[in-house]
Length: 135
Length: 285
Figure (cartoon, rainbow over the protein chains, first blue to last red):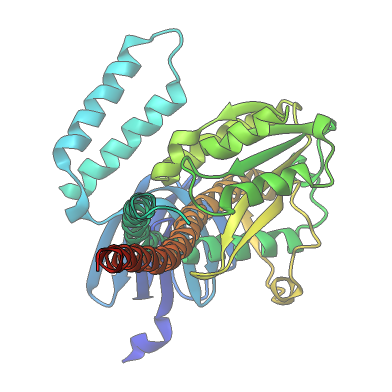
């Protein structure tokens, strides 16, 4: 197949396990500067991840996973994601995510003086990503 | 020679101690298997992290970043990882010794302890313990490591400590565990292996080099903490397994010895009784 030349290696590694190891023709994920999509022979790039959905495309197959925090090292032939947390959709507890979303929203709405806004927002974003990928 | 009753009592008490050490050995063997498996799972993350950070630093050696140079304070923060429970042979005292016999003067040391045993031993010797997170060692998670890391880095950023070290037991294999004192911050260039700097791909950084370092170095430190915690748990159980194994075989030896003594004493008393009876019968006839 002509696709042969477009395949590169992808590794997603978390502290507790090698989350994913395989090949892809394209990978999309969310960084602190916005979403990016990577094909083979991308320029070498190290970037910081933001909570979001990682989509690994190989030919017509697509795999999705939720990834929160970490960084990515992109080399021409290989993309390594060092994530602190990574989950497949079927590992996510939707009820917990919904609860976490409500909790975070409440905290943000309450506007308490000693509220850690950044933390609450991050929690909200994580919950939203989890709910998003589940649907 | 001790009486038969004394020997018997002694033997019984050693036997029950042996049962305990045997049970402890079995428990720590199972725990060791688990901890070993865990340590192996953590390894790929740690290796990648190490490689990524060292190659980053090798390429961007000129970056003037607070994490890359010592702080103004002469104080040195040491994170000490020991266990909460004893009976693990030299496991805890080896780590304590690493600090008391080390080159860093006592006055300059600020401790962050994980594990009761190390905390107690070092406190007794008059070291300053700033933070204790002993409960973590029971079942270390990445989140725990991240919490500790945040606190230590805060102190570093605030200038309270100028350097950060980590003292833990490296798990080489089931029988060999090495106590290690490792310098975490400032990141040292001597450690950077030349292999990493060989691949001179021109790496780009987003948002930019400094911010990327800002985000990645704390993660690097956290991963080191986490790796050390997991290895320490494996080493603790390995050390306890060995200690209990030798305790069990020592007890076995003592029991054998006492059994021999007991049998001798028994035979002695029988012989004595017989002699008395014969002597009595002879006196009568």
